[in-house]
Length: 71
Figure 1 (cartoon, one colour):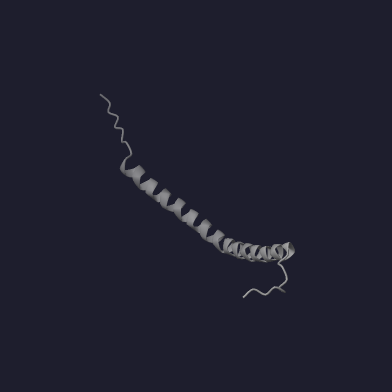
Figure 2 (spheres, rainbow, N blue to C red; figure 1 turned 60 degrees about the vertical axis):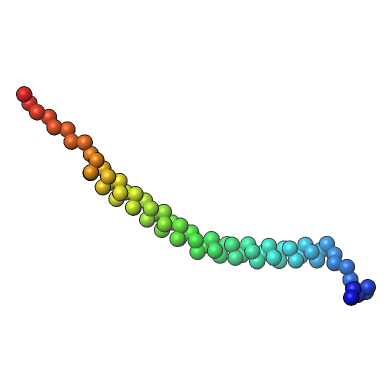
């Protein structure tokens, strides 16, 4: 069962373990962010281009034509 001669876990051991896990998570998050930035920029540009062309189409179909006649 429990070994009475086992050394107790110290606060320094716990802190070191947490630092190592936090470091790994931070490194993976930074690597993921580096890959995500170009994708986000390309997506934003695509959305702007689509909005531009949709706006042009709606503008031509719903534009008001004013006819001026001389009497």
